[in-house]
Length: 343
Image (cartoon, rainbow, N blue to C red; front, side, top):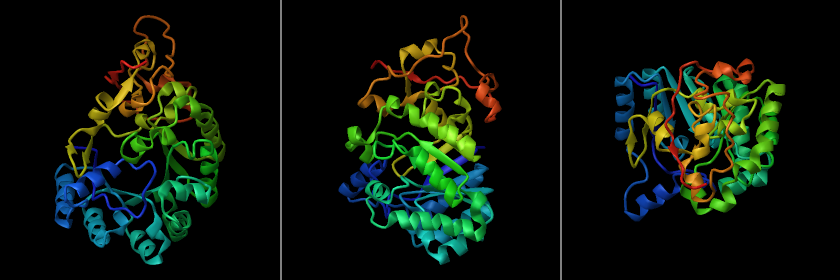
C-alpha cells in the first residue's frame, strides 16, 4: 500500500519555463526519435497500478496534462477509482468555461496551479509564453467563482527572476482568493541547469524574503509551505517546511524511470547536507538541499542549530516553537541524507 502515486503523462507543454526540470528529458527523447508523451493505454495502466496499490492519492502531471485531447477521459477514470486526484497544471486551459464546468463536476479533484510572478512580464518571461499570465490568473478566478476555492492551491518556483518579490506574489494570490501555496526551491535540472547562475539563487540571497513571506502568510491567514528549504533558513518557522507534511511513501512514474519509493530516495540520495550538519540539532529531521545545488554552489551556508549536549537531536516537531503556529504530523524521522564533500 502506498500513500501517493505521481504519474507524468508526458512532456508536451504549452509553456517552456525557464526553470523546467524535464526539458532535457524532452529534448533527449526527441533526439532519439521517441515520443515525448505516454499513450492513453500506458496512462490508464499506471492508474490501474495505483488502484491495485490502494493509493490514497494520484497526482496527474506533465508537461501539461490539460492540453491532451484525452484529458477528460483520463480524469474521469482516475476520479471514479481513486479517493483523491491532484492535477498539477499551469491552469491556462481553465481560462475556458467548458474546462472549468467539467473539472468542478468531480468533487475529489484538486488542482495545484503554477504562478511565477505577480508581474505579467516576469511571469511570461519565465513561462516563455505570451498571454500565459492572463490565462493562468483568469483560470484561477474562474475555478474559484465556480465553487472550487477550497480545492485549488498555488505553486511558486523560486528563481532569480522572482526571488525579490515572493511576498508580493503571495499577496496577489490572497487577493484573487487562493488560500494555500507551496513555494519550492528549484531543482538545477533541465532548463534550470542550462541557466544555472541566471536561475538558481543562493539560499543566503532569499533568506530575508523567506521570513518576510512567512510572516505575511500568517497575517493573511494563508497556508504556505516551503519545499527544499533547509530548516536553518526557516528559523522560528521550521514547521512550515513542506517535507514535514509530505506523505511517507510516494511512487514516482516518470517517462524515463519509475521510483517505487521516491520518499526514501529524496531523503537519502536526492538531497545533500554539509559535514557541519552532523552537529545540528535538526540533523535527523531536516533533509538539506537538492544534490544539484552543489553543482554551482557549496553548502557552507547551512548553519547548525547548536546542540545542548551529545546526541541532542530533535526527532519530534513539537520541540519547535513554530509547532504552535503550524502543526504537522508527528511520525518520527531519521533522515540519512548524503554528506557533501563540497564546502
